[in-house]
Image (cartoon, rainbow, N blue to C red; front, side, top):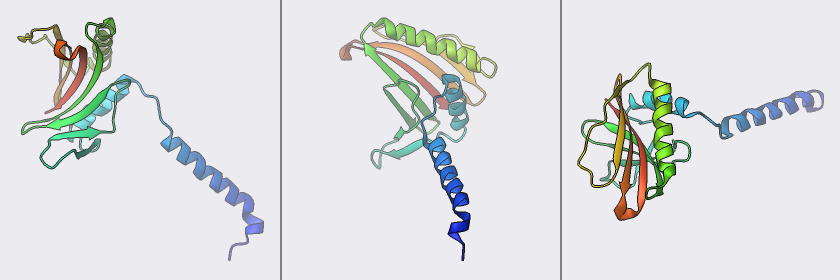
Length: 166
């Protein structure tokens, strides 16, 4: 039998230690976009299996995720027969200059972060009735893209970052 009177200081230290470890592990951590991108690029190798939640219904190939990029309005994972994709969207009022700033900031941060492991590709022209621009980065196993679209029917400008596996 343990003599609690004799060893109570040890028990106090153990309980405090366990509390500190628990708080450290569950306390929200701030991270940079770069560290988040590098983690997501690694996750792409497993088609984002460790960060996806269950689909909303049995026939859906769209998944919720608990991994959100800073200030994103929505993030999700989708899959098709060829690949899985992680995407986050920032939503702004139509034509808001903050959307332009977000697109430029994301593009610059991505270039700075993954420029050594990715090859930037030219914007692919699309037939889009509203404003559209994009940046593409070919990854060793997949692709990262950033796009900005005006969606006049919803009175929004959307900035989306997408990472495709394979």
